[in-house]
Length: 111
Image (cartoon, rainbow, N blue to C red; front, side):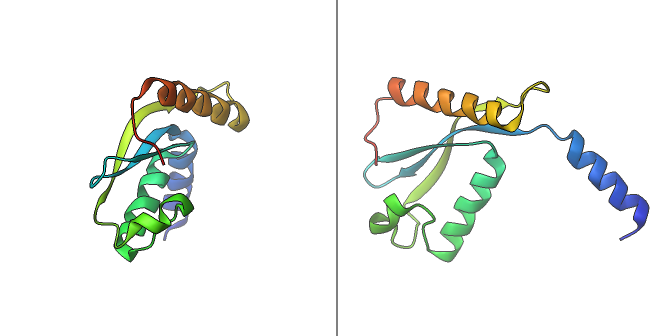
């Protein structure tokens, strides 16, 4: 990789907006849902996809129900973009609050 392109990639990474959010891992068989929150929604989706591809749940609460993972889906509930004046702690606090609000308002069968 050329030195200039590494610099460009680093600059692009630094300017990329961080998007967190609330998501559910849904058991499509029984409708139960594991509500989670994260500061990196894309990373959470990648971990879920990897878990399905390998047939191994990364969530301890789902281990007994996972099987090969084919009956589970990933559903984004809400997203939140990190504001420029927020540090990481503030951002995760805001995402956690968003998850608490959704858990109160969603009528779901939870894990």
